[in-house]
Amino acid sequence: MADKKPDQVVYDEEKEKYTAGLLPYATNASAPKITSTDLTGWKNTNINKANHQIKTEYEKLKSAYEALMKKHEYNALIYNAEFSFEPNVGQIYHLYIKENKQTFLSIIAPNECRFKYKGSFKLNEDKIWEKVQTE
Picture 1 (cartoon, rainbow, N blue to C red):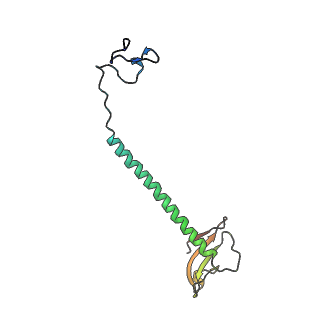
Picture 2 (picture 1 turned 135 degrees about the horizontal axis):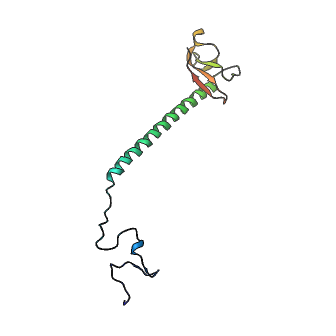
Picture 3 (picture 1 turned 120 degrees about the vertical axis):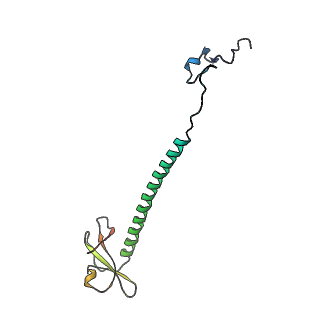
């Protein structure tokens, strides 16, 4: 108790030295008051920015997912359709529906026949069917 320092003295007992000058904050009674900065405005602004960015990324992912699911739907429809030929990569084929609701793939263009037209598709190098617009 005899060698105890007063409260206003900054002394490190483990290192046995005065450390007031080494601290990142003021240590004497006449030092300016330490107050926390109000970060509410900064937080609200950045929360809005972050939420906007996340929502934008979500919308991109959602639309990419929907496009992928549409591509999957077309591929399932075409691979389950009837056709008696081996399709060539890059060639445009047309999908039709018969009266008995069975789908079939043909090279005959929609303006050259009277079948119920479902769409035109092209086989790519990865053997994935892609929907194409016909004239």
